Image 1 (cartoon, rainbow, N blue to C red):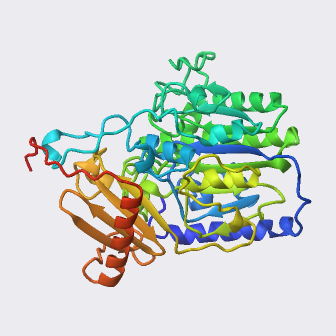
Image 2: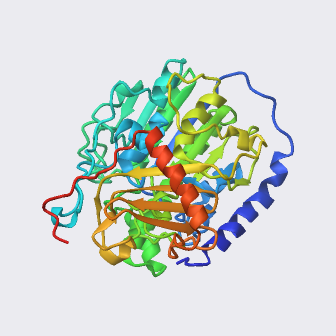
Image 3: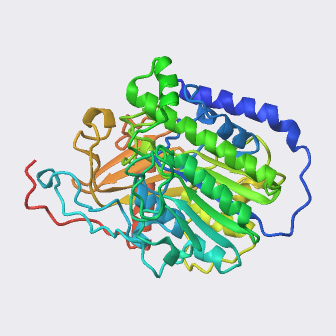
Length: 470
């Protein structure tokens, strides 16, 4: 398994992709006047380093590698939240969590009450109907809007701008990856049919029937638990010496990659690939207890890098330089304004917190010192104690806010008003707190963080929990 030499493997893999594909991008094709199709692939719980393009040679992911060879790979990409529902709410609204109030999955009172020092902010579990989503924007501009897979923001995606919904509801994970699925929004297939295969076939079928430009939000349930891989793939990885849970996870990742290959092949067959932008990303970091996120610290549910760093690849033949690499810090909030911009759509949403990053792939080098924020005024209990690699063994995250600007990352924890400052270039694992050493940097970021919280009206828990025992 890869360990602390991971960044070097990443650099080597990306260099190879860039070298092999530089010759295929010597000329750009003529600009198309037709509105582009959009395929937004949002994988569930796929860690930053869980594919070959990001340095993992243990899992076979040739089609993701191929996608990177045809587009731009971002090496500093983030989700706007460290777990499923809030990240998806941010992606689809283009707004930070304090604006829509979706902070976590289910109750904000996660973990044992005796271990929580504060009464957390109340969580909103269903995205408000009044919010203008990315799907609304495309729908009102003549696109066919299609949602396939995990929705997780309410029972009915159609109220949020989707013409078609397949398999999407409030569920955060499947009951089973093998049919029968027990999903009220997806008819069961033949016994033993695999869910990721099925969702890909549904996507291809919808694309084949689309006569107008389309926006496809393909939100696979994979690779979220339960860890259920196809037996032949699990056996393959077990034979390579992996422990059982890692082998099952690897099997799910490889199957996902195989299905992406089928999707890309169908786009070629239908002659749609030239006018289709494909975005590939994940909703949060991987689960550290299943597959370590090294060199980043922790994993899903944590606001250390392992919980919020994600893969992001964008591909659009003739528009995005093949095999290109960007170290621009980006966040999934950026996809809302970017996708509208390249489609020639003026947003109706009055507040968008991301920025149009299409200028980056058009050769306009953007600001590497931009600030990114995360606000989590609730609790999220541990998965597996020490293996989670969080600040303590009881919670993956306690209430707090984080900010990254350039190489610097600051955390503020509300229970004890503690501040932490890390230099991600020299300390990617966020182990050495420089708050007392780099006072000028710390105070600058603190002022910026507090200003942002005021601007977004971010709720901060202050009420003591009378049941707290520690």
